[in-house]
Picture 1 (cartoon, rainbow, N blue to C red):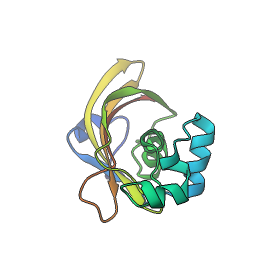
Picture 2: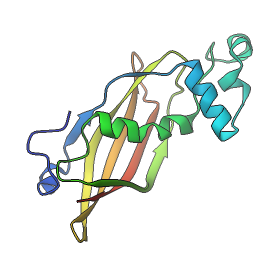
Picture 3: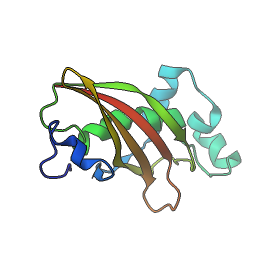
Amino acid sequence: MAPDRYTLATIQEFVGHELGVSDWLTINQERINEFAECTGDDQWIHIDVERARRESPYGSTITHGYMILALLPQFLYSSGMVPDGVGQVINYGLGRARFPAPVKTGARIRNRATLRAVENKGGGRMLMTVWNTIEIEGEDKPALVAETLVMLIP
């Protein structure tokens, strides 16, 4: 949930502050399989449950790192990171992105987002830089840490 008074007009006041934490999302095998089919990334560690159980150091299949990255927009909306007064949100790019820990099938993940910077791009548009940490329930290391750039249009 976004902070009180968080709007496009007041967004500068929130630089350096946590914007919100998304709901938990369970990563199931069906979702992993659909991502593999969509992207063509069908490595056995993602989709072959029996082989992963036998041969993987994780004892199960794991999700694709890029699938976790692709979930950031969903987390953005569910955590209330889009301030009031915004009519359109555009993914503008990425800064640093790392995958410190794998996400095993069945794990629950969520995003913790902090506003790092806001740049006025004119015409009411604001480019926000957000630091995202995708946490894995019960794990010390996150699944993903990434800086995202998001264009907000009134």
